[in-house]
Image (cartoon, rainbow, N blue to C red; front, side):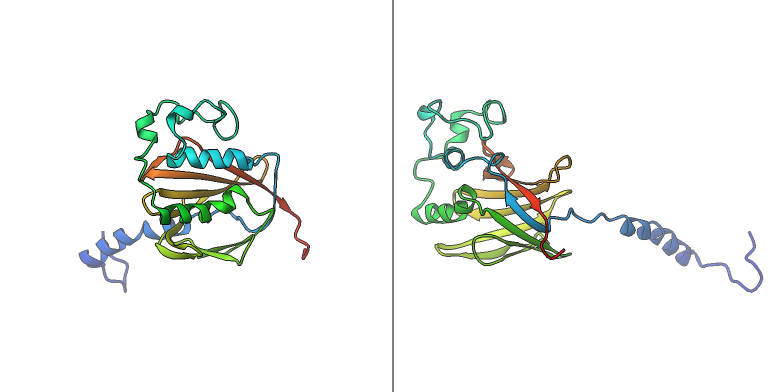
Length: 225
């Protein structure tokens, strides 16, 4: 095929370059934005797991609740039959050695899980392209959502933390010594538009504990609007 008058035929290298770059632009344009967590949220005490459930779930997921004590009031968080993920796991898989958790680890775990067992009655969340800022009990907590590890200073020490979008949810992970990884997953319930925060302790990467903690928040009107 002859090139139109006044135009030279593209060189083979230029033609190949145009071919390789052609599909790139549509892919970039189709990148979906994460969900919007921003707003003022009020704790729904009726749907949120109560402190006793949460404390017991943490004990079981960390192995502090001994196997022979199971069945004496320990229920899967959310009620019987709510989760079946732990039913088929052996006691040896669930329970670590008794000396696994050091005193320092225990202090860190207690501090990190304090806001899980006693969640703030109100949350204010601000969000932009790179961060999510959550205000609750104390000073605002700024989460970098690029998935990079950062040091989170606590009263009892420090932990490594990562935060990243995983599809329509935000996953925040705290590495707590030899205990494992405490994970928060923030999502919006499609049907009710409520903020659902699920908390779990992964003893090993990709192996969540048998009990999952559930915190539910209702969006409140913004007084400024």
